[in-house]
Length: 444
Image 1 (tube, rainbow, N blue to C red):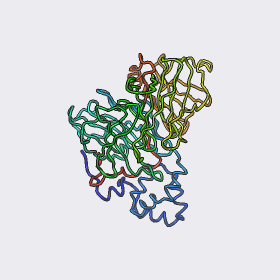
Image 2 (image 1 turned 30 degrees about the vertical axis):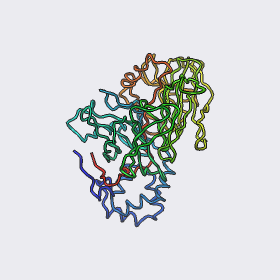
Image 3 (image 1 turned 135 degrees about the horizontal axis):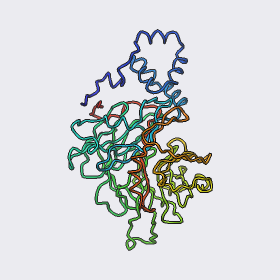
């Protein structure tokens, strides 16, 4: 059952705590301010949330620019993330790979387990009616199907249980992606992007909902490659990158050169112009190449495997505005057979924070494979429900059963398809979910 946040709860999002105000004030007087802030900054986010709820003064001090900068210096990366499957009809919200614990958030369970307790309509079956759409900087977009023609959209943080309901768009359009703006390490706003039906040539027509205005706006984005929004995007720094098939018509274009392997179309939804950036995907030597689009360390990554040869490209980030996008090989080609890993694999994704770690799917063993590109060590993970210890103090789960169901859909696919998993990553610091004007955050 939903319950609106009171003003005091919005200031102190975790009101339940065992620490008394009196004891905290006594401890504060015994220690110099800077030393106390340094001690607090070393704690996990869950513990800091308890301190924030002790008093308004403690809440203010732990949200000061000094404290947040100190916290970021000690926790440069979030240690809680999941690679999520995009929900399809009659498939529950599930993750392929999930990491939790560590020293940043110290969560006792995976991120996916926090999503389905979100039930604004308790009488609906969660498996059939709740759909994971997208994620960006700790926020996720969930769609709830009340009926075939009646849907509700929510954006929120499933860990803090804070949600905002998004009003329906003016016209029928398909869910596409979620982008966020981050300032000084804090998420300050978000935008929901939907693609209109009946796209026209050279124009990507979208509706965009902004948390800054609480309104939908219509945009006509110029792209010589048609975009239908059918494929899930990857997002970085307010930009969406979508893989689009080459559906251009030869007789309507001059100097037409077909691109069998498709394009990557990028647009900055916090930018001012209406011009998309478009780049063809790298052309492999054989149409039976296996491919994925992913991100790592703030870059878009393209991975291909052909006959046990692994190649990884990085989308160049040093590109002037309005210039063409460029792919760069991030490392030398790796011959998996020559290093003793002669296994037929599909690329799944890369680690969000470590571009030396890649995740593959072994068709022969029906399991996830972790690869260290620095040491050239590849490990098969046969377990599905068991959690294994991680080297940095957390736990990692490899969801064998649901990965198999998802990857069986690629069994007969060639290079006309690209594996794209959604990265749900908690940032090092999380404040209240950005609240559109004239709306309230709601606890579910």
